[in-house]
Image 1: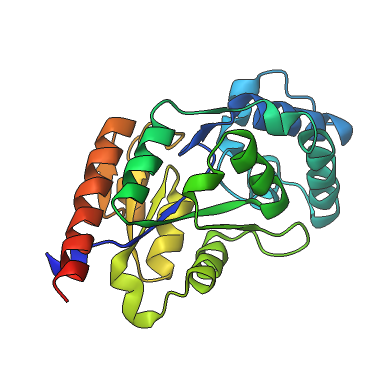
Image 2: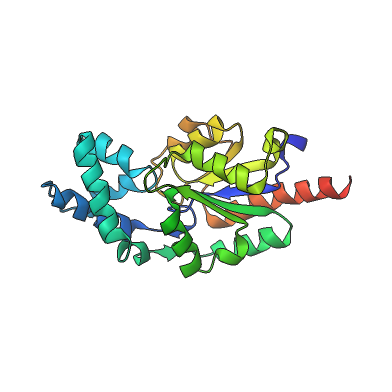
Length: 232
């Protein structure tokens, strides 16, 4: 059981801690409209929740580099003051974070969302007191999940020998793939926006279907880590 003992827990944001559907899909709709693509059904834009915007605009609408750059610019134009707060925290998140902190776990946000937006969201929805660090994508740099996870490592002081004590929690394949690339275990959550089978195919170490299941699993894993620390 030693390899399962977790001291550091990294969380994705959209679809894992918060319900961001309205703000993200309306901002994507606005961005597409600005470059002449009209998408009336917001449900068709749910697939944008999670992955980096640059990847999604190219993959789902075949945009070239110039149009992708413009679409991302237009998305952020709406999102920065309006879409960012068309959002809500999932029921049970605060209780889970509080319980994990009281048990001695170190918690981090690791999101592809630009950190300037992530910082505002954790403040708005009361998550700041529970998070040791916030790691996010960069407006003019990488939003790749593995890079964000590595930034969280650096901020938490996690070295190569500590990776067995780290776990990433997320609702999309990008979270799981990023965790695998960084050599850590992961929890895939199915209360977010993953398609059926997506998290298993990506190689998630654990799978849960509810916030209650997630809280129970993380408390068990971090409790074992604290017992190990106490025995040293």
